[in-house]
Image (cartoon, rainbow, N blue to C red; front, top):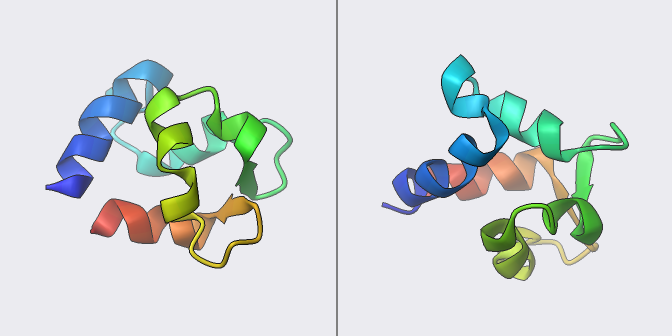
Length: 74
């Protein structure tokens, strides 16, 4: 259910739904292209910003691709 909700809330806002590629969402949010989402980058999507600390499982202040993918798969 979490994955379904995540897709419904985040993909339409970034246009990733149209392409059908979830990695497009991560790439669209990763403005500096460093392979991780900062709190500032995540703030572009209010629901992602609200869940930031939950998704950032290692507590390093960034959401890695692996953390992002893991959160989507739950």
